[in-house]
Amino acid sequence: MDKRPKRVFIGIPAGEDLIAQVMEFRKRHAGLRVRWTRPDYLHLTVVPPWESQNPGSICGILGETASGFLAADATFTMVTPGPVPSRPRLVWAVGKTVSFFPALRDELSARLPLVPVEHRPFLLHLTIARVRHEDEHDLARMKLEEPVSWTATFRRLCLYESILKPSGAEYRVLCEAPFGQKNDGLQ
Image 1 (cartoon, one colour):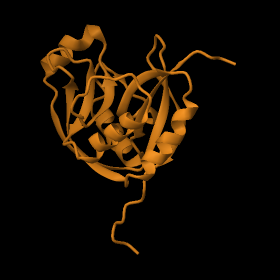
Image 2 (image 1 turned 180 degrees about the vertical axis):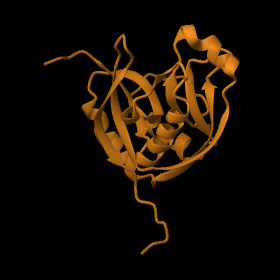
Image 3 (image 1 turned 60 degrees about the vertical axis):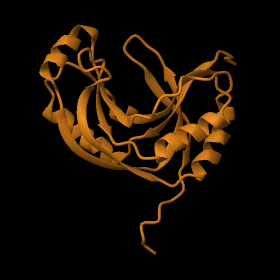
């Protein structure tokens, strides 16, 4: 049995509607010199990666926490290079952060046995591509800023394993937990 720690993180998968909107953007920008994020890897990071000796123990905490939050909507309003536009490493969709995301992150951080990490304001972002170092300058000169109106409902929370490889990280869902159900007024 392998006892090495796993590199894990907690995220919210993008969902089919949001993936479809990202794929349409990709079609329109097929000429960009970037490494596109695989559709099944698109997610919002809630708790960034850390090393865990026992990821299975986190799954119960994930379920208990997720059940206390209702499924949430978010809208992405811009696709832009980031985090520093003059030296972009990513192409991401950003939007206005709603209280759901920092509250969820804070609740998970309080319940998980994590090494304390720097507390930053939550930035609603969806990484849709990674920029190769040699292409940063070209992308920065393009001044890519495309308004979008991508709305999604986030329905589940996942514990992912991040397996680092020379070709890029691979993600594997270790466990998932649904959020509580939204009441859309339909009975």
